[in-house]
Length: 71
Image (cartoon, rainbow, N blue to C red; front, side, top):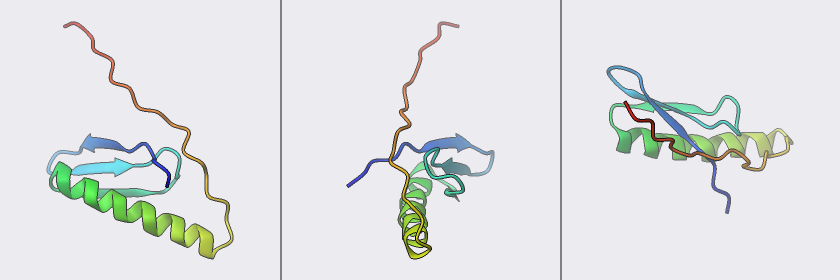
């Protein structure tokens, strides 16, 4: 099992998510819970399609850290 970093952004009326290590793997949802479920499914489908096309699956190498900045 692999764990891919996912970036979730507030896009106004909804949230968008993308996976830096899987270019083109994106999703959206109206809540954090919905976009998280949607990107999980998108990752599975993205990898399934890559395998069907004989492409190599990139290993997850991106990391996410939160950096606190004083106002």
